[in-house]
Length: 85
Image (cartoon, rainbow, N blue to C red):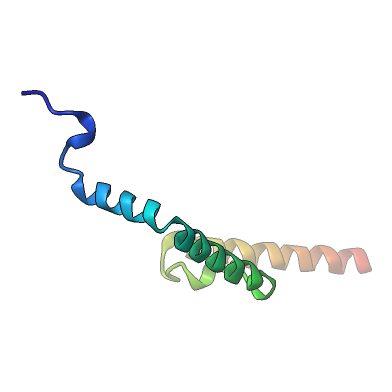
């Protein structure tokens, strides 16, 4: 006995799809409402891209990055001081 591919054990999905089709206007309005709400908030969205907040400060990569930044800043300050003379 061969099963039809659409009549497998996906009765939950079938009921969900039937509910979506039966209530398509309500679903469409809900999606539209959520979209309008999210778009209205885009003006006050703030990105926090500071990696120091997300990375553990004891990780070797983070420690090395801090060390390189300190060396570069001191060399840049030395170059600026030499150019000013």
